[in-house]
Structure formats: C-alpha cells, structure tokens
Image 1 (cartoon, one colour):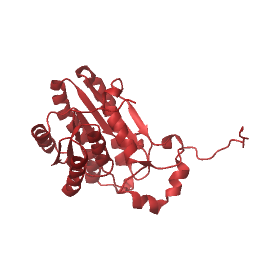
Image 2 (cartoon, rainbow, N blue to C red):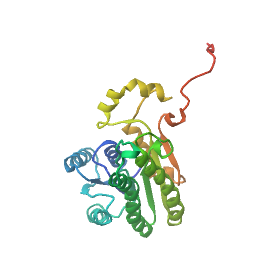
Image 3 (tube, rainbow, N blue to C red):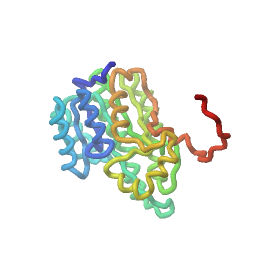
Image 4 (tube, one colour):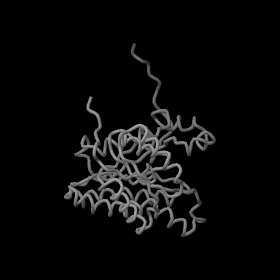
Length: 267
C-alpha cells in the first residue's frame, strides 16, 4: 500500500498546541514533514507537542507565538519559520475560537474577535504563505472549517458566519492561486472529541451524539489529522477548491425520525 510521503516538506500549523491542531502537527511529522507549531496563549503545550514529535520522528520542529488576526505578528511568524524551518510548502489554517452567546447580547468586540481569528487569520496567513509558495513552485493551503460553514446553530452566529466565509474564501483562493501550482482546500469536521471538549461531551450526553450521528459515534482527532496529511500530499494532487466534511454524515441527518417499515434481513 502506498504511504503518504511528505519528506522534505515544510509545514506551518496555526493553533497547533492542542486538540485537532496538535494532532495535525503529529500526523504531518509522521509523514516526514518538518513542522512549525504556532500557538497564542500556551507555550508549554506547544513545546510538549514539539518534544513528542522530536522524540518519535526524524524531522525538524519549531514553535512560535502569534495572534493570527494581527498582520504584524503573522509576518514575524513567517520570518521566524523561514529562519528556523525553511520556506513553507504546507499551510494549515487551524487556529479558531468560538463563544456561545445570544445574538442580541453579542458585543461588537466579540464579533470582531471571532471573525478575526476564524476568517481574517486564514487570509493573513494564506497571503504570507502564498507569496512564498509562488516563488517556490507551489504548495498546499488547508483551512480547517466546520460543518457549521453550512449548518446554522443557535448561539454561534459569529462563528457560523466566519466559517461560511472561510468556505467561500477557500473556493476563491483556489481559483486565484491554481495558476501558481498552489492547491487550496478546506476540511470541515463535525463532532470531534478532544482533550478540551471531552468533559463537555460527557456532561451533555455522549449517547445523544451517538443517536444523532449516522455513523453511530463521535469522531476523533486522528481521523481529521490523517485526512489533512493525505490532502497535503501528492496523492491528492488533483483535489483543489474542495470542502471535505468529516462528520460521519452528521450534517446530513436533519430529519431525525425514521418512517421506514421494518424489513426482514436475508440470511
């Protein structure tokens, strides 16, 4: 079986210190890529991910702090990567944030914060990465979105709006950068269990998700990370401008009742 090979590639993952981002960093490194781990608030966790990668894989890894919604910090981050890892081949815009609030209580500052991280951040990072990829013969940009780029949800109007924007941003960017041999895609996870949300899932009721999701279970970080590694590789060279949902058919299950008659199974 053909293995995913990213040896010699240089990858930057925003929000790579924990959750899905950390899983993506590890998956890319496992396939041979050198990895730059962006973090914003938790240097220790970023270093833990870097240390784990160093102990398991023969790749170069570095960490750097940046608020992806700030152009000056993004520029500094890419300059640091240039010096410590090398010119970028793979950008994964994973950094994201949400907060549950009634729309009538949502303050302008919070709207701007969520939009900044989830939509402006990918733009700023894609711009810096794209300039380098253009001069380097190409590359891959993967935006981590959500099923809420299509599915609305109460309390998350700012988050859902940002992810919907990210979906169209991905499609427009793929059109503009294809001529430079740069592929642009988005990966939209559904319910994915992480160390950060495990307690919340258990409190809410894990069985509810099992009933709602047609595949019968919540997804895991490795499933998202492996998909990103595949899309970043030459094995996915003809996939461009796509929005890939990883959700166990969750977003397709809006009709919860089942009117089908019982049927006998052939034995």
